[in-house]
Image (tube, rainbow, N blue to C red; front, side):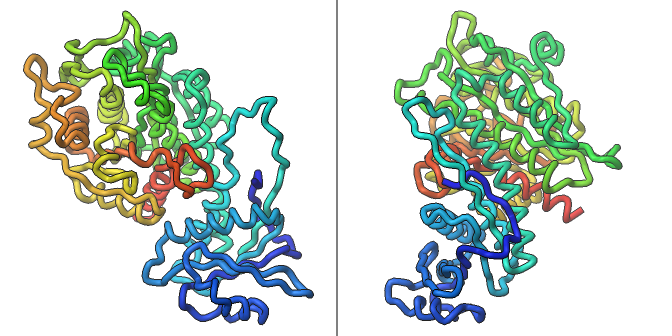
Length: 485
């Protein structure tokens, strides 16, 4: 597997790639040998299909099928490009040029390619030991033969680095990746990337700020909870309201006293995926997008463990906005820490809008089958923006309902609300409704439940494991707001 991707004008490629639509005409610049290869019966130009041609006087030619034009999407580009990246890796090529005929959005085309190639550099085997053979380092040099495609290619590689940063964080095991380790990663990011500042709220300061959800969820663990705030605030943005990106960061989830089953617990290191996605997006915002307005990332980080100090079903806790919550299920902890983040964002940050992202409910996965993430919101403009960002990046989301009917499901008897409605029906919408009790209704707000898309066993992200889902969507959301403003 190649370990890095570089956008380089290396003049002597080992291969030139030509992209062809299924049933389409050959590219005008296609060499004769490749035109003959296109006539082979085994090549039809289906998405991700590859065939090669060789010339005695020049580099090999790789034909990459893109599928039917009517079915072509940004995510289709990315998936086709991933097949190409895997082929190039198997062939151990080091210098590759990519040729495209004019497309509706050549730069977006290039960006999708760049993301896919960068995703290939991420390895799931982060901690090889003495029984794993070392892989040779291989650097891939890419060049687009179209200026706009080349710009997109470079941007895609940069965005892909943010995705891979996120995947690495998610994949780090819980005996290492505890809440304060996550805070250290945020601080390292702030030192590595110009324009980011970081604040970590922990210990007595959590009490002072009355971040009661974090305190309760985290108190059973020897690894203390914290809230991590990372900000992009460019010069000249004073007085502008920030975009808030809020991520659930449960570094491990046993379920607490409402303990998970033995088969339900493995993989719970992925419960920090939302917060990790926010960090990856903040890297991209500072390095790639560079908006002229502030963006604040908030990670609510805790480990949901088990001890005699743990919070219990029947406990009632009071949030900083005065809302009282009866705990009915300690395994519904993500919404308790997100409630802290929402209260803080509304009261302290004076936000332009809030997007939260979380592996919140198995119900969202059950409803959408891991094909889409779910988005909830009652202000159509912000939901439409989030959906469009998903479409633009191939991280598709589906709008599910949240309204007073679901808020009624969460009403308590001894408290204002309960943290979990024990009736399983409508669980994803009920969880989203719970969160609305902690957000100012005048603030544009959308909640993304990414439980079904946080990791994959399908060969769509080059490795099995964390997908880094949400980084591209959040990056595009901020980029689109910059363009619209």
